[in-house]
Structures are given as structure tokens and as C-alpha cells.
Amino acid sequence: MGTSHNNQKKIAVINDFSGFGRCSIAVAMPIISVMKIQCCPVLTSVFSNHTGFESFFFEDYTEKMEPYIAEWKKLDLHFQGICSGFLGSKRQIEIVTDFLKDFKDADTIAVIDPVMGDYGVPYPTYTKEMCQEMKKLVQYADILTPNLTEACILTDTEYKGRWRLAEVSEMAKKLVAAMRCSDPKVVITGIPQRSYIANYAYQPERLAKVIRTHKIGESRSGTGDIFSSILAADAVNGVDFETSVRKASSFIKHCIERSIELDLPLTDGVCFEELLYKLH
Image 1 (cartoon, one colour):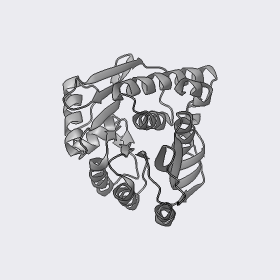
Image 2: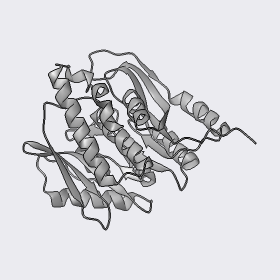
Image 3: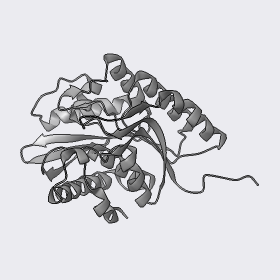
Image 4: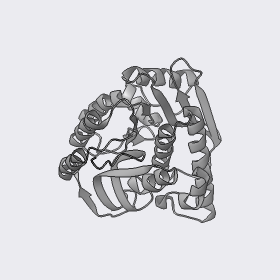
């Protein structure tokens, strides 16, 4: 009888690694682990600290990704979840697409966080060509977690400062239409509503939910990574989508509150470590 490496739930997380600043894989690993799932990272690049700092070390891992993934094929690894985050080039999006084709089966939940921009502006690395590739990647998602800017980019909608829920709903429906799975779920995050920040959770043929939390402080690095990690782990653990979105929204709010209490610089992200016990 052969050795099986598949006796425990696993989520493959495809993202960059930052040694300091609390984002990407450095956030996903402890959160997914505390939720009793093995986190298996695929590095797209390595940073000493993220790009919100004045200077940083950076190494691109694009050329190393395919031989790295090839070793996982030899081990016959199977994943209950696959979660992708920031991708730095068209080639990396293609590699992730191939990864999903190779490793996603009927029992795998793919969570795609299309990290493309914020505040109405695409990130400098995101060319029109990359935006088109990301639109193709969306079709493999079971759960899609764009912020308002990314939802606009993916649906060719003009960004603006204020939104009616009917307009957000229209974008969510367009995103769901692009997804090929049988039970698509979309949450559009970071919708400003006066003193609140809202997340719009949408599933076809179910009542959409607007989940609001009081806006606290300013935007911090890594909150999107916390959000998608909790959703991925919950989905693999069979937790209801709306319940999971509420849990993630509340957890991030408490993390921001604690970070303000500790007077952490915005670049340093949120001190989720002190609150991990809430995710048990």
C-alpha cells in the first residue's frame, strides 16, 4: 500500500511572501492553520517587506514556479481548496490557470482574490493585457473576492465615489455570469457607506446580503489576505458563505481596533496574532 499525502485537508495558496508587513502568504499560513487546515504555499515572489515601504528587497519566482509545482504532481497531492492572490505578470496568471486545471477537481473549492487595484486605480504592474488574463482566470473561481475597484475592472464598469446597491448588484451578477462552477459566490468588498464599510455577498437565487461594519482608522496592508484566507478555510470546512463573510468582516474590524490601540504604523498591517484564538 502506497504512502498517501492526502489524509488531511489542504489549501494551496498561490501568492507572494513578505517577511515583514503582514500580507500575502505570511498572513494566510497562520490563519488557515489555526482553522485546522494545512496551508501549502506556492510563492510567486519574495519581498523583505511589502511595496508600501520606501525600500524593499524583491526576487521574482516566476521561473521557479513550474518546476516547484511539478514536484507536487509527483507526490499526487490533492487539495480541498486553492486560493490565489496578487499575481505580478501575465505569465504568472497563466501558471495559476494551469495549476487550477491540473489540481482542481470536483471536491476542490477555488477562491480567487483578483488583486488588481484599489481606490479606483489599477496597480502600476497591471497592464490591459494582464486585466484581460485575470478576466479569464475568474471562470475557474468558486468564490470570488474583488474589492470595488477590481469588480469595476473585471466588469468594465466606470469607478466612482458613491454607489447604489443596485449598481453593485449588477456587477456581482456579471461576475457570477463569468464563473463556470455550479454554485458561484461573489463578495464585493470595501464599499464605502458614510461611516460604514460594506461587503456585498451575492449568490444566484438567494437574497444578497450587505454586511456592514463601522469604518475604523485607515486602510492597512493584508486585510484582503485575511479576508480571503478565512473564506477559503471556512468553505473547505463547510461553513455557510454568509456566515463566513460576517466572521471575516468582524475579525478584521477587531484586528484593526487592536492595531490602533498598539499604535502600529499602517504599513505594518494588523496584529491578527493576538486575536487568532477567535478563529478556532
